[in-house]
Image 1: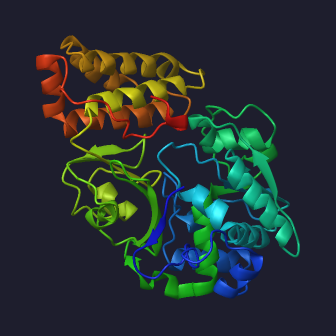
Image 2 (image 1 turned 180 degrees about the horizontal axis):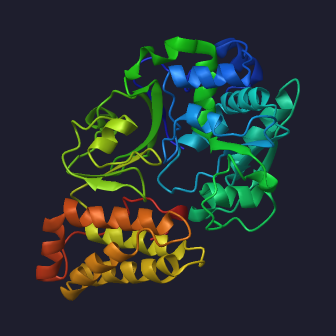
Length: 405
């Protein structure tokens, strides 16, 4: 999976410099016992430290807890279906520090008096690590549910469908899991890193906010890609700059994809802040926490075309914007790649029509990412329109499942 690196004092990655996987005994030695919180105390903690979810929405954890109806919550679900091809951070936690994820799950389940504890995951190595960790604990409580390795299967509603033993595709319903989740009942769902952060915060209390940005205290995990390098997972304070994080892989920073395949292509990112609220002020989302720096050795437009084809193929086929819109967008990108000028105007038109019309966020995110390329790399597009090529080979620097090209 690549190296794990920490800037500053590690929290989530504590001990990973010494062992490949932290077992139950080593976990307790490193982190100490897990305190118990009731619902009011857990809400208060999450609010006092401004804890944001570490998934794409960056939703405040205290708000999510408060949004659950009073009384017993039916289920707590860890969304470990890390379907973003450019992200490794949740898989790293589930494989190498599974007890932090399980601690967070136990913490929330106890506070909410939840009946069901579920971890949804499609990666077999992560599933086996979690199942082993569950058996290592004194009171095994959680169950692991396998989900398909599809991009849209990591969406919250798709995960709920999988837990309920239905096809793991987004339903199109906008109802939040906090109101209608597993078996149609109130459910707390978040990604693996959020649960691990809760486990750290429960032990640290207010000291959790001693590092990081004021608007998003603590640390966060990112997956960082540099050309020709094995990606690393980095734990950094949230007040770090993107240039510092990208420097860990010695990457060129002329064009960087921030946030993964529902993210944003950016230029001149060195001085951009890492915190999610601060990035949002610059019109950028950290999304899945992936940072990918493209080199000057690869054809950027062909890189984009490969990803556009992948995203179109990952449609669940439930709505026109996803089934037809993304396929047409991918076709436009291919045509621009070989110099078809009319395709640029068609693409811009489609990118303005697709968002807001789909059954889930997939077409919106894909359109946003592709549209940001038009802004970030106009010279690249002009070169292809003038010559039908940029003269550089396609190196496959934007990762795709199974190395597909």
